Image (cartoon, rainbow, N blue to C red; front, side, top):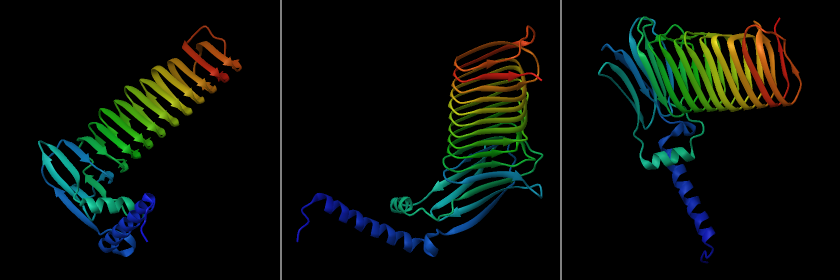
Length: 320
């Protein structure tokens, strides 16, 4: 009997392709579809003043070494290999994808249960190279006790967890993922996410802090900086014990803004749908606006300017 319906032909072809891919995956990766996993350690003896890590799916970690040496430690899975070299004073680490097209296709169909590759760089805490990490879907973890000249991280779908400081700028941008920084110092911080949260705690920045996102929450706790700015579409802002020596500027389309024991020379805060509430440390000269909501702010003729506006929401500020 002939198959006259083209959709039946397509379905039959997909079943055959699935069976072939399953056979390839099972034959190449036994032990419940787990790929071959191996460790690879490389000791770096050449001097360097910069680190560049190009990752695809690797999780990336940098931490201090116990014996004063610099090493690149890898967890490699079948079809992937890492390349390490010191090029013009830059320690360069790359992950190379050496899979065939059939292996890549079978991986996309049967990727559950697989362990992702990892890159770990251990280095003396006394050296301060600049750090650049370019990652696709791997997370980045920067350990405390490390200080870099500057930190620059770009990620597609990745989380960045950092406790390492920078002598100069910290620049982190991810498309989908969270940025979580704790206990760091820097000359300036530029943080951005498209979809994800930004959280910074116990941080000191000698210059400006910029934290922008499309959709996500911004949380700053115990942060001091020269100035603070944040632009975003949807998400709440919580500032707890945040002090800016200069201006503070916050903009949201949808989201609440909450201050807890905060201060700045001047404040300019706007949200379309959300409340603006909390406590400030020192008197301000308030200018407020709301479309549908209540307003309660202290009356003062001293202090810096504080412009607060919302289309739909309440404005309530206290100065203890």
